Every structure is written in structure tokens, then in C-alpha cells.
Image (cartoon, rainbow, N blue to C red; front, side, top):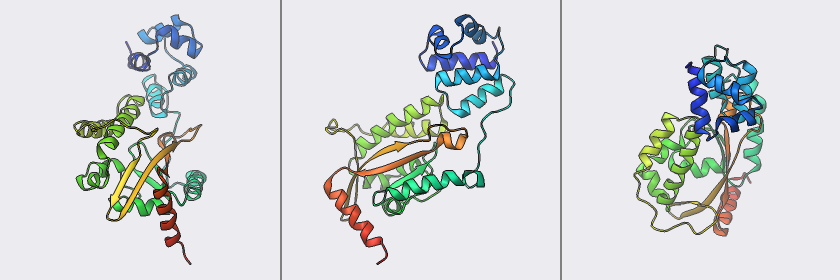
Length: 254
């Protein structure tokens, strides 16, 4: 069995497809798919692309499959600061600015902050966050955990989310290390009662309850964009809304 054949079989099983189901999804005969998985047939670049689409594989994994089959990588990884990425940075910046007075950030696959708006700078400065730092690393610090009033619930949710993100990529050492560190946290004493689990920050007199939505680019052709997530924070209660709007007003030039 070739490296490609072994990887294809592993990913098919990880995505819980039978050979027949994947063959139907990729519009290829089940016999040919069987030959690909045993190494009796060599895939074309186009076939690898079809299988990647059918399995919903990340771009980095598709590059790896191409390399295993003897092809050059298809998807580049441009520097976030490069001129080619300028339109993307501008689009992200626009989205973040428009979300004010509520916090918004752009992060990579390891939750490293790439950009954030002014309200996010205010909020996340409380835990020492800034562009270039990973929120995952910060969340492992006990002083940061102490500032999150419902830390057990947040930690449990983080583990669930990180498991999904790691599994989607066939495992990620960085994410898996954080999962291992958080998996031993005490379980929440009560079950969630609301439609979402907010993160409740408390620092001195400041008390904020926030939930998030996550946006991604729909048709990425670059590894950096495939990893990029835009996280938008929203107030989970009226008091938080009033506080955020008041903080934004105080920070605005008169």
C-alpha cells in the first residue's frame, strides 16, 4: 500500500464514509476507489481534488495528499502581511471595525490573534492579549482563568470545540496539547440553561457576559485563509450591551 492509499483510507474512515458512499459523493466507481486505497491505481491531480472536495479536507491536507501521490502542492501559504493579502486584510479590518462597539478579532488555526478592533483591544488587554499572541496559551494561565466567572463551562466548551477543529485536520499537536491540559479541569456544577454558553468576564467593577459567532472565507485557495476565523463578540445581556457602548463612547475622541 502506498502512502497516498493509506492516507486516503484513513481520511475516509475518519469522515465515516463507506467506500460506496465516498465513491458516490466523488462521482467515481467504487471499484476505482478500492484500487486507489490498495495502491493498485495511481490518482490524478483532478481525482485528488474531487476526493478532497467529497471528504471536506482542509487545504493543507490536500497538499499533503498531492505530495504523497508525487504531485506539486496546489495551495500556497502567503504571509499575512504580504501585498497579495492586502485586499483580505482590508476586508477583515472592515468587518472588525463595523462590529464596534462590540469586540471582534481575527485568529488563525491556533487562535493566534492576527487583527482586532478597538473594543477587542480594550477587553482582551485585561488578559494580556495582543496581536501575535495565542488565546489558547493565555487561557492556560491561572490568573486569566480566575477572571472568567464561569470558567468550568468555558473550559468544557473549549475542549469540545478544539476536538472538532483537531479532528477536522487529522490531529493537531498544538490543539491536542491544550485539550489534554483542559480535559482535567473540574466539570461544571450545573448544566447550561441558555441557548449559548457565554464567557463571563469579571475584573474589578467590570462585568461582561459575551457570546461569539465565527465567520470564515467561503472559497479559500490559500492555506492562511483556510485557517482564518473571524470571531465576533455579542453582549449576552442588557447590562453588557450598555457597558460596551459606554466604554466605546468614553474611548471616542470628543
